Image 1 (cartoon, rainbow, N blue to C red):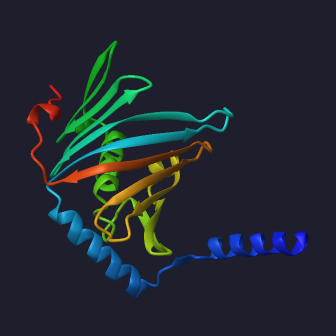
Image 2: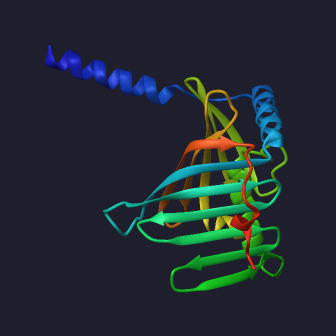
Image 3: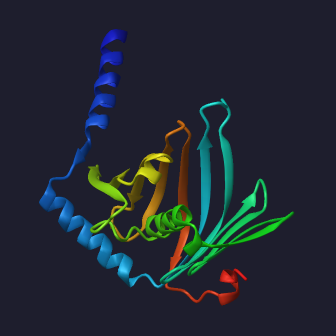
Length: 210
């Protein structure tokens, strides 16, 4: 009897794993067009986020949280509020990294790698630009009623950092729900978005990167 129960649990687990199905080319095109159409309508977004980072050299996971603001086309404020205070602000070609101890300003036009990374951040926040992505090969999967995109880096510089990135969407395909980044080092970072509000008024001072 116990053996039968164990076998049933294993079977259910296997069924759950196999539920992830890669879409064919036509299906992927249809879903990506729907995601792009929704992303194009997003002019602003505000949400809370939680972040979990697993490092290969550490057994304990690093947990942090904060708030994010986005304004079309290229304004982003990513602010950690716990367990430390750290803010990443992007406003066009200007980027500011700010902590309680220091502030650093960067012009992304003078740093090719940093420009690529900031573009990745913007695209993963909105879920847009999956159709014509010069930086990644995109594969789309269905998992039950939800979908997720698996991105594999094309360029040498990005291959040195990322193994792959997964962007998960809510069932309605209207919003990114989480992003999982697997690095070449073996470190894995998962960011989950919650309490999402779209197309709301956001104070411009949130994106002040001077």
